[in-house]
Image 1: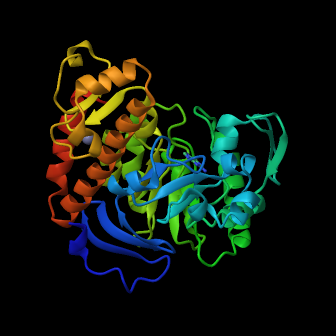
Image 2: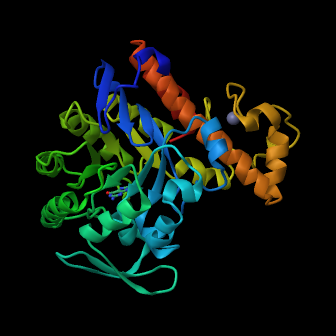
Length: 381
Ligand code: GUN
Ligand code: ZN
């Protein structure tokens, strides 16, 4: 179990202790200013200073260790200066565990209008009201420091798929220069700065970007540029050739990924950290992840089914409510349906990571991995 790895009491800020490995898979602990993080870890996405539909108490009860916030959204509304005045993001949202913030680059490219890229940074118009903004590496660091983030992401450019070799090369070179500027500007002692490897979906470019980014000494490194519309098999094939080449004694974070199957494949390649909107977003659309795969709560066969969503789940939703009731809430558009489905899916993702940690620690990762893949492949992607 998580307790079997010894004390974390003497760990220093930013320290990353690998307790056990099996193949490329790792069981480790990362120390942040708001406490230790047991990895592999799935971080719940709380873009606008809230994990949609869940209170911090519910997140904790589901086993959540880290919440992710977004520079882009919080800069536009309510503004990092307001959050700073309110005592920082932890106090503002009443989440007192570790917080990781994304740097804004990715969101500027996916959400904002009329972007103008330059060496200096990105000018864009807000998706909320069209107002003009400018974010540079220095500005992104200032925002994330004002938020009081425990793990700050470097300001990067995330290319869309497909991209030409020339576009990839230009973009990863810019991302590297922005990383140097991010590092110079990130002066907050309590925060850990993570660099982001780009390089598109080509192994050659990935390894070049990896070499550039890891030449900068940082407490952690991420793989960005996935989940940008590429066929998923490209990522599955790339990860085992890239993740094991990342520094062995530093955390490895795969950004914006993924399904339960993706997480198992990535852990097997040596990834330690994940975030993704999938479990929360699909819950609000009535999609439920279970140990038997993915199902829709809408199904007619659940109309008079008084069993729980997942007989193997001990979340608040499964302990107290039937499929028939959850189907009724969903079809009625009731807000409680979104809440109960989200609690279940977050609990499922956290339990999957807890079981992965235990399996690695106990030397039965390969068996656990294969069991998960046969279970999930039947009904889910
Ligand atoms: N989230 C998912 N992918 C990315 C990426 O490439 N860069 C950043 N900053 N965030 C991401
Ligand atoms: Zn459940």
